[in-house]
Length: 218
Image (cartoon, rainbow, N blue to C red; front, top):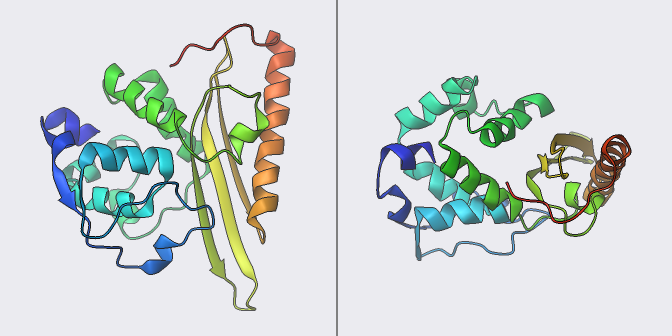
C-alpha cells in the first residue's frame, strides 16, 4: 500500500504466478477459499485482496516479490522493525508488536486515511471465522488477520501455532485484541482464541452496555 501511494498504477500491475517454491506453503491447515493458480496473471490489487481476506500464501509470496526492496525496508524501519532481521526470517513478534500494524491503520498514522480504511476493509472481509470472529455476536465487524505455523519437534510431536489479531468494532468502543496460541491441535487453539474473544467482548459490553444498532465501519 505504501508503494501504491508513491507509484500510481501499481495496483493495476499484472504479475504471473509460476507456482510456490516451497510446496509446504501450499498446504496450510486452514486452506484459503481462493488460491492463485500457476500460469495465470493477477493484478497487484487482486493479490492484496487475496492476501488480506483469504491468507493465500501464493498471493502473498508473489506480492512480496513485486515490492521495491527499498520501500519494503523503509516501511518496516518506519514502523519500528529491523528490516534485515525480518528478511532473514526473524519474524518472531509479540502480540503487542503485531497489533501495532492494526493500530497504525486505525489511526491512519502512516498511510493516508483512504488507504488505511481500504486495508481495514479487506481485513474485515477475512474468510477465517474460527478465532476472534467466533467469539463475538453474529454480524459484528472484525478487521483481523490470522496466521498458522506448524512443524515437528525432535520427538516427532507437532509443535503448532495459531494466532488471530485485529480490531473488533464494538459500537462506541472499538478495541484491539491479539491472541497467540501454541499447542498440538489447531482446533483446540482456535477454540481457545474464540473463548478469549468471547470473554473480552462480554467485559467490554459490561463496561459500556450492549451494542445498539449497526456498527459503522471503519
